[in-house]
Image (tube, rainbow, N blue to C red):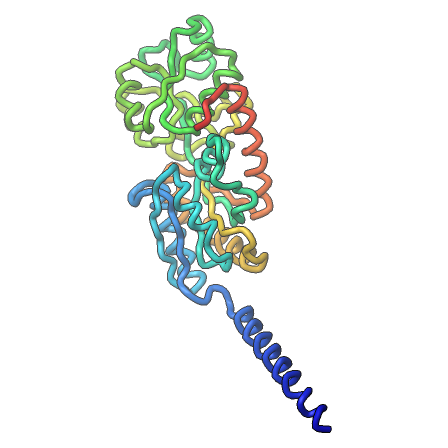
Length: 328
């Protein structure tokens, strides 16, 4: 009896410790989401269109989730710095990322040593909208539509040049040149804004760009907008046809903004966030805000978003190789 008593003591302690640990884990897992403020990382400086959209989404989610959503701007390295912070964060839904195709597509495909794989490091929540992207040409060109531009460029091989200030503009222009069978020279700039003076002066004759302020240049007669990328015309310039409408199909480089969480975020949290985001994006006030920022409202489920990203990664990788775009 004495030995049996001594043997029971450590066994009882282990059982109690195990039960207490299980109970603590159950309590932690039972905490409803969200249980504290949500951090929304925007990998751009404050004041831009992505920041404006991020803050609107943050305010809306805060009202719907019942917790503060704090926007945290983390610019740098084409947004890879802010993206990496989300990837490293705990996958509990309390740290989210507002990202564009630059962070999700350009960084992984244009780097010789990609810092992350977006399909394994991040969990898509949904799409916020597709960015307006227009084809601008200098008014000195005797063209008023895409067919006339292609005909003129073919009649003047090697004499025209196009500007690009980001990876999306670069690949979209390269895709246009290849699809139309043109001979044009690409001229890189450190952003769309630095390229604008040369486009207005006619030193370069064409540019595919997202800078919606260029539409004011169109109104003033300093530029022509002859086509837009996307499934539908932009509300900012409803008279400008899409590339498909203008007669050139196959422009698949689509600029967009989406919401992401770290990988391994639970399906329950992802479903909740997706549902709240869909409700938010369908509100008329938010749709108008997106349009003011040059975005076309669009909704995709997490699964649809993942398929879309996978397809876009394949397109970017193939086009980078075919166009001979240099990777850094």
